[in-house]
Length: 77
Image (cartoon, rainbow, N blue to C red; front, side, top):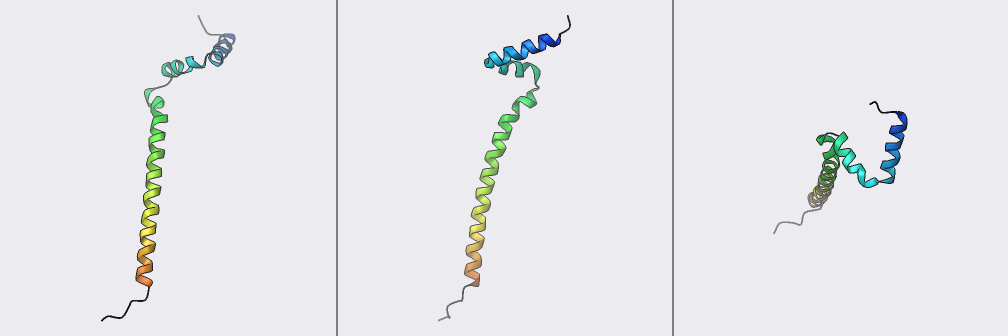
């Protein structure tokens, strides 16, 4: 029996009324790869945060090294 537009609207209405059904619907309709995307994006976001922190630390070290190299040297004894 083919699905009708009314059936589709009824399904949408039911999913809006029962948000707890959405996860099961996603599991049935989406591939495993698509279902894993939110976790992968969270992991990537955290890795990006760590990278940004490391770059900031390296930039600070480079700035300090540049300051040391540019500062006048004290006379040798």
